[in-house]
Length: 128
Image (tube, rainbow, N blue to C red; front, side, top):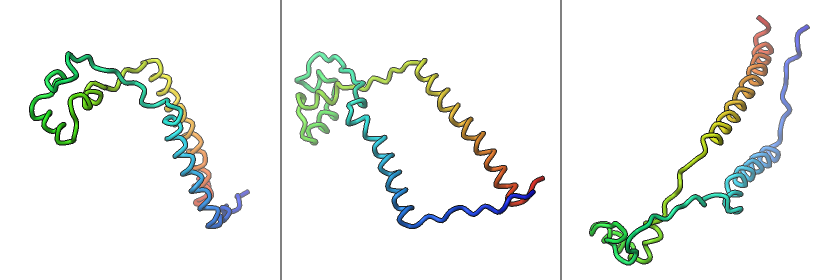
């Protein structure tokens, strides 16, 4: 027995607009929630320097100091920018867990997609 030809339901323009805006809001919420909860950008370390009140103490040569001064910075105001570094350390265990979750997700995605793709091909061209 052959399956009837599938006709997807029609969606109105208002429905499409709502879906698009809803997905946009979800994406923005996923991106900005860590910032609002102060979960991002906290991994900073301060480099120890001998003297924060001079360009030489901050490790800046004359050319670099000149560029800082063109931007309106003094050694005292530039010191937090120069000495602050991001901490890029990570846990291999957490990286492994993340990799397993992502790979597992894609394996499931491909398994379900393959089944649906086969159904679409059978509907369009018939069973082999």
